[in-house]
Length: 205
Image (cartoon, rainbow, N blue to C red; front, side, top):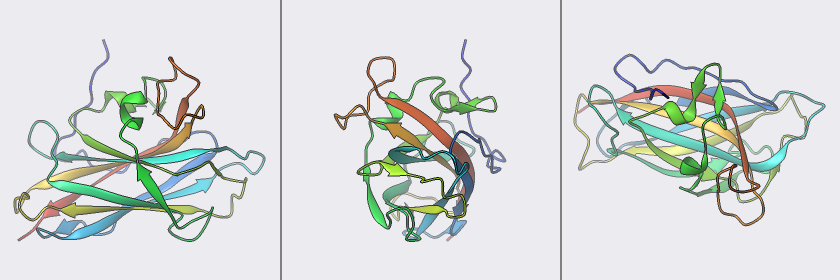
């Protein structure tokens, strides 16, 4: 039986899973204390790992939110737009599209490294963003691409003193050409994760 992994207080240490041709070098939250209505960004830094490889596919990031200390996921932290190559590298800056179908399309084993599988993470509200076209790492190991995703503490919903786990997943979607995320078992689509990171924010008055 597959065991779902939940997140509780203290379970917000940064953890990276390495795979294939990109490396999730860092996952950073701009401001760890938010007032109601305040926005900040989470930044993924992706770096090519092997100069002999040049992976070309649609790149995605997934940001997840879960309230710490309470059961279930929580949507009091809004996740809005994402920008690929916010540092001007690898074709950026480029607006990424929100594609919710990515999350249910990822099957066990599609996004798993070092004993942690994306599909085992429970109690998290996810939002996925995808580049509009294929992006190659071009084997340029000396350069990196930064992906910025905006998050916001919803003024009418957040509670002072409450803390949230913020998770980030970066990976590749090899689309079969129809622009619709489908499971790898039922189509020619395939998925691969570059890493999973986590952090947290606290609401202050």
